[in-house]
Length: 448
Image 1 (cartoon, rainbow, N blue to C red):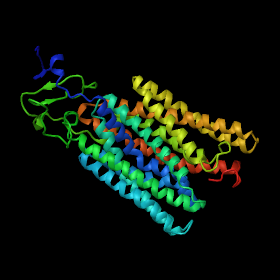
Image 2 (image 1 turned 45 degrees about the vertical axis):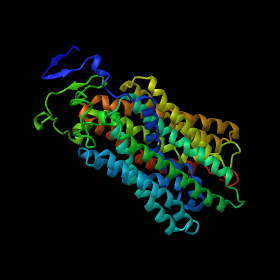
Image 3 (image 1 turned 90 degrees about the vertical axis):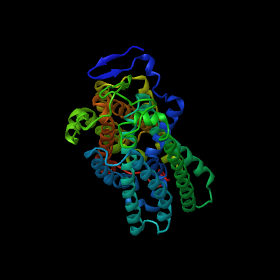
Image 4 (image 1 turned 135 degrees about the horizontal axis):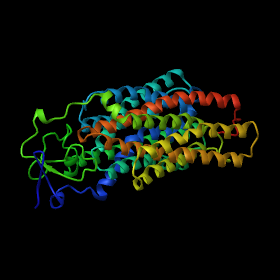
């Protein structure tokens, strides 16, 4: 075995690289499931938004829920990236997933326990949504930070799983809608929601079990060796760790002595981290400003052919399918800042095309078939560019920082995603106001 000295360390050549644990298809599937779990709670709420509109429609759930869900989320994600990993990823994710399961099961029961459009009922629902935002902060920050220590293929798998999360919830939503048919719209919404959110909780439980299993694997121990989860663990024989600053994680470095305090990198502050990632962070924020200014409220407030009962979930499904496609195709692309700028900034035009199509429908009396086709095109482009932009920014960020802070880089992108969502939900109030000035639909046209 050929060794060469490099500033006091010994670099392992191709022969010894084989000691690096193989991820394989099993780990890719695990990270896809983690992606599903990281956004499942919000996707469940979004996929069954018709249930909330049915019982609390006067409070505009499609817009107000987005605002409530991401308000506390921002605060806690900011706290978690301000300091260097206050909690281990395992603790963050255990709390986040368990609390999400409990909240999902309770939520529909709270809604149906009050009269329709009850102020008290909506207030309690809003509190649960606010709490869920806190829980989402632990899940998203935990999964983003944890995955940033792994190779690009696992980052893409997580991002793809986040897209699949929405599709899965939509598919379950279609099945529940088809199976629950009592002849009474209120009963259908009530029983359907209880079944739907219970199934969602079971899926999160499966994600939790797989996460606990994954932490016991050599693959996790290897890539998370510098985190609180495995700070002092050894990899195979000897102290094998990944070299600091190696963007592609292609080599192992064997050190003859344990790392001491003088060898540790100086802890980087939030502002220093932001300076390193300013382009990526701001672009990842802008992605979701555009997305949530137009989705879901603006998108589901337009008609889609002659669909009634299935209109809302169909629009959301179209979005989730193409968002997933966008996230997955990035595995064939090398993430660069140039591509980020092209895909993320270019989608600004959608702010105008969504409103223009609605204007043509309401004021110019465009044929409903054509307005529906144009709506599908708009939603498809919004979703596709959202998926591509998200994966590009998430995949690029860890390559711009030293190895020791890759987790904080991933969490930073996650925080600015949420910050963008929050701003986007605020812009959505303006978007809906403009649409209200242009015109409205009759009850017959948009019956849920």
